[in-house]
Image 1 (cartoon, rainbow over the protein chains, first blue to last red):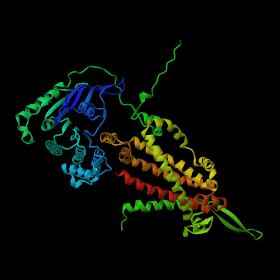
Image 2 (image 1 turned 90 degrees about the horizontal axis):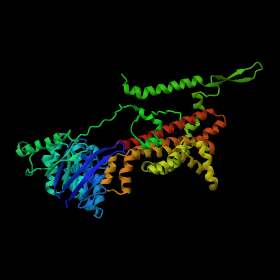
Image 3 (image 1 turned 45 degrees about the vertical axis):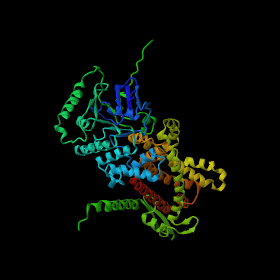
Image 4 (image 1 turned 180 degrees about the horizontal axis):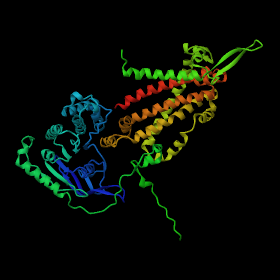
Length: 306
Length: 280
């Protein structure tokens, strides 16, 4: 039995008559201590996939298990690093991390918890900024806080949902190295999601492409046997790196367009009515958000003689 | 010396506006002219466009005693204008705090629970537009058992009920607008319901809550005048009404200006508080 297992999972969203299938036939096994990266196009269902493991969404069919137990909801054993950091803006760096630590390690003494928080702030090199609010930090620093918050919970598996995609290239490279270093020290299981094939091969033990078929499914996994620590300057010249990269990109590109089902649908052009501010507090506002279209108001009544 | 544009727009233009209004007021106001009749008696003749409207100068002369000694207490019904205002403010503060204490939790429940919204939103929408003048008698009836305190408690009730709605509705909107990201954080960290409320929902809703609090305070200050006119408890609204009955129209104008100034000051105060929380 593997550490994390997803079996024949499928997931779709929407009401029965307007449904989008996002994932199908997802089979994934991750062993303890493994660093797995899933690469895919934007909008191909990567976040949905990682949320199956985090427990924020449940599969429609099939199952997701961790250590043999079915995942029914989020838990502190699975630490999730969000794409948009999701720090609480009214709490300082320390308080953001303490919020997680206090919840997970309730039975620890106050001092022990504080020391634990400080340790992880130091690990991501943010000790000088410990008492700053998120708005005073750069994007890279914020994501480091988010990583520290997750690591401080000492999860059995670290789930990273495009953790670096909102950062500039240089900060991104630096954080990739930092996270890889932390992993070498801690050896936690990591499932990392990205849209960058280079990033994937640079950090992973194993890369799995998420093929952009519709609905998306996982391709064959590719083992990365490049010794660690990997030097990002040298790795570009490594033949193995070049080969894997070419292979990965070909796999992703080739699957695009395959498996497509032709279907036609009538499209209506945007025809949005201005919002009626007088209706702000009625039931309609609560139940359906989003723009209202003129077509919604059209109705035809025909009288016929029986 | 050249005046800066800032100085012009922040000080000169408003002063010009005030001056213009005073001018129009003077032009419209009436006065009294004395004339000797043929029989040798003095006859008072009213003049002006609006004969009973006192001019700004008359208003100042006749209400000076209320202004220069704003906290004086000469008699029960003859006190400095700020002393009257102070009585009113105390009642407003009490009623307002009741409104916040009751309104905020209701707002949270509306924002969090669809069932609760379905159940109570129609009632709220019906009660919300009811005038303070309509609530007042009910308030007094409700506290009839309290004897001579019935009027005071009724006044508090009216202020609380009328000023509660902006707090309720803004809090509800604020809770619904809490970003899903923050709720996901709470879920992933497995925060308890209580902790989610205090660490995530309340801070995220604060800016909306304070907008509600500010609007509520404005309404509470509107209501106090009506309440005092009805109950006859001492305060700025009551002073206005008494002076109307005494035919002292200058005092009415003084009261209106005072009510306006205090309302404006309260609103400024609240918006300062509000902007502190908006900056997060």
